[in-house]
Image: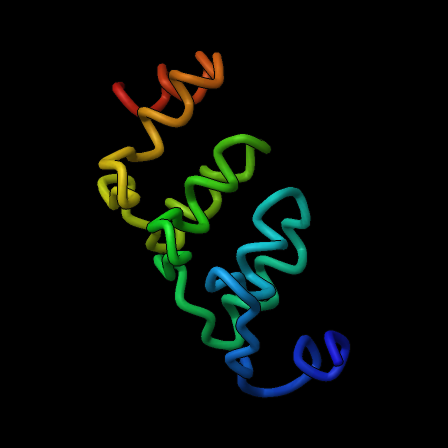
Length: 102
């Protein structure tokens, strides 16, 4: 099923419990899948049921900068009001924090 979605002209809205899409899963470390999904129309600022974005997930794996370059909004907050800056700071990702505040 994943192969068919990745190879198709359009991204099918496969969503699991909690709102997880292929793009959300890929943001945890599979940049090539992220790129493919976005090239086929995946919504870069899609949120999970808890409000987490693809960008928040990617921040923990150092893939966030590519997403920002391709339209992800660094100011989108989850349901608790956290943005990528909050997430990076609480996870000790000081390089991400530094890049965001510059």
